[in-house]
Image 1 (cartoon, rainbow, N blue to C red):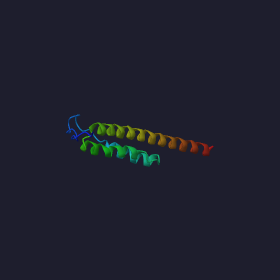
Image 2 (cartoon, one colour):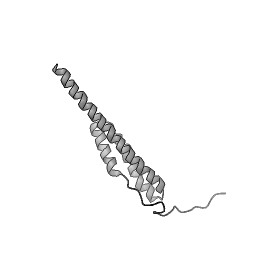
Image 3 (cartoon, rainbow, N blue to C red):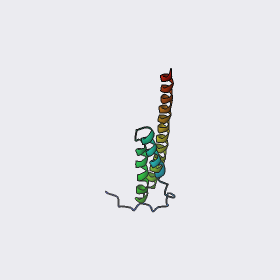
Image 4 (cartoon, rainbow, N blue to C red):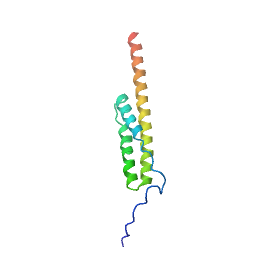
Length: 101
């Protein structure tokens, strides 16, 4: 009825353990909180912390997916924060110009 337990494949069967992108997660969190006041960089940070745990458990496809998600959310977070910074700068300059008229 139930299948016998099989050990997870040893590391290296799927290839090398992926990088966890923790640096980009930390940078994205700091940039998003500093410039945009929305902590969406935490999503990248959470995925980055899952990479090593999944790789240690033998779930290398899951670790690769978590690494890709961490990188994607980090880039999205930085782009949104920079757009927020640009909008803040634009409206600040625009308000100075209007107040001087």
